[in-house]
Image 1 (cartoon, rainbow, N blue to C red):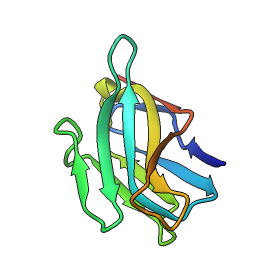
Image 2 (cartoon, helix red, strand yellow):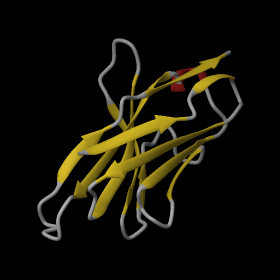
Image 3 (cartoon, one colour):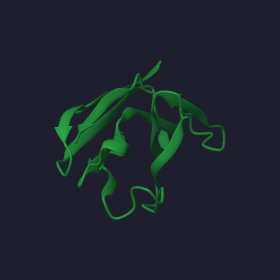
Length: 122
């Protein structure tokens, strides 16, 4: 079994900061990609940021320069540093991991966390 658990969400004023964490546990051989998505009420889920095993990162244009995604050395935890928060950032943030549970690393599966609420007040 593989489980992703997010933490760090909360209520913050515009201009403030939060740091989200996502820890993956279970039978994990390797993690190829970890990413953060978000979904606001009435809107579809969107990719916020991703980081590959080699360290390359991608960001949505709306958060570029404000958010930073990173991994720990074990590559089983991903962080999202949210700075200069805006009310438009209010959403449920979901952690996603593309990983392999065996040495056959070309066989990957996608796992999702339960989500953590980020609310930014004006």
